[in-house]
Amino acid sequence: MNDIRTSNRGSTVDSSRADRERSLDALHTLEIHAGRAAPGREHDWLADVHRAIAALERALTIQECNSAPDEGLLSAIERDEPRLRRRVEELRQRYRAVNDDVAALSRQLHAISPTDTIDVADIRQTLERIAGELRYQRARETDLVYEAYALDLGEGD
Image 1 (cartoon, rainbow, N blue to C red):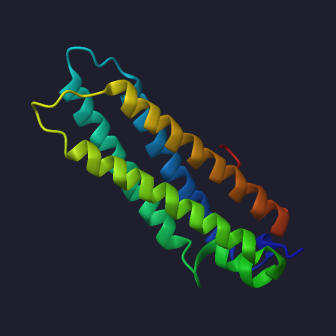
Image 2 (image 1 turned 30 degrees about the vertical axis):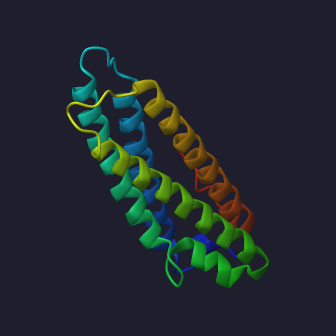
Image 3 (image 1 turned 90 degrees about the vertical axis):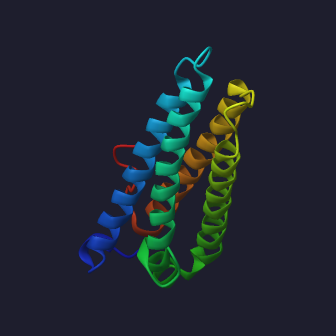
């Protein structure tokens, strides 16, 4: 195994960790807002959730850009450990799917008018599914990085 810590990829690892922290912080904020009481204040609740999901979208977009082919830690794994290329591509595809789910939910929330009835429970369930998938992908990424470099990317997760 290559030792990424002794290579010139230290900043790539730092960038990946920063991206992961940013998206995890945004996810936590979203969960906090989604978990707040909604009866009688559904539209205020929705506005808070929508702002939080927009922050998660931004964080995931930055993370996706930084892990694009030819850049970032996942690309380094593809170059250094060709046996893991398929898993890297699968991880990228699943992250894109999560990003698409977040964007779709954001559009759905944005389309709710002030006169619409808001199904808070349904929105929470969708958010739980997305959060679960994002955490699952984070764990897969951590395992992949560890398998490639014996480096625990998930420190602090």
